[in-house]
Amino acid sequence: MIIMNTKNFLFRILAFSIVFSGLLVPAYSQVAGENIGNSQEAYNPKPASASLYNLGLKSYESGDLNSAISFFKRAIDLDADFVDAYFNLGAIYKKQKDFPLATYAFQKVVELNPGDYEANYELASCHLSVRNYAFAHKYFSVIPPSFHKYSEAQANIAKIQNIHAVATGNPVITGDVSSPENQAKLLVNTLAEGGVQDKAIGYNQEEQLTSKDKSELLVTTLTKPFKNSFDEGQKQFNVLSSDFMGPTGIAKDAKGNIYIANFSVDSIEKIYPDGTKEVFLDKVGIQGPVGLVFDDENNLYVANYRGGSVVKITPDKDVSVVLDDLNKPYYLLYDNETNKLLVTEQGKNSLIELDLGNVTNRPLTQK
Image 1: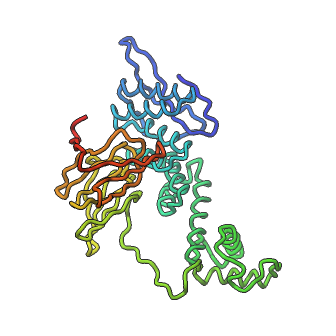
Image 2: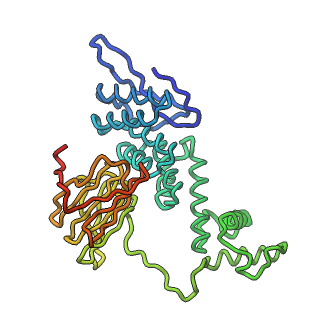
């Protein structure tokens, strides 16, 4: 068994024993900084993927996070249901503050085992880190009272609710809003978030607020939406669609259809001008989509953040690779005057230019 100094870094470890056949037989174990709990029971990965997983643990122990990531990915390539490999990938990405990839990894754990409350908590924390409050609230709400991080989850839910109250002026604190305790909580959170400025209700910031002033400030916060730099007569925004899964890139084709990249589930959704929505492409050549852009012939290009590639999707949904071996491709820009595609590569902090007139598309089945 490999014992690691995990400190506060969650990590899942498998213990391996050798039988007379010489093969490694994985036995599920949870040697970690904390009690994981509620993991997928009696899951035995394939011997080859278990060996790669163990190499990933050794690499992490030696401080080589890039090799650890590589081994865990290869373990998953051999065993797509290897929940602990996904979990450890998420833990490393979160440690590196790469929240999009951490979110994807923890999302896979939750899809494979919805009752894994540690993964639900970590997934919610990733969403909270990038201020994706709706999904953070969703996954924190899954945590049951019996789980050891229940109180932390509830505290984060209260924080999200109060942030919403500050942004909208609609108090959503659980319980009696009129109670002195909840009014005090809302006022403290409002002031901490910077949602109310003293000058907005006529106070000089250098003057000390009296009890009456504080009461008026609280009433103003509870009853009026917070106005930032918008004029009172400005039209409010409209929510055209919702229920996406980690929406990132957005593009519009020649017919006025809108396309949204769902990073968390490897899909692209299409919204018609009348508002109806459908899945345009799901997982076929799509691996962590971020940037989307159309060319003059209505071909859609997708930057695969996790897949390290840019793919082309024709109007007939034929998918091919136009550029690969990239390190976290992010945004795309099409120059219709030169027929060139510009790609930002986040992993190398670089900008790539691709002449689409001279590129040879590679079918997905070729390497």
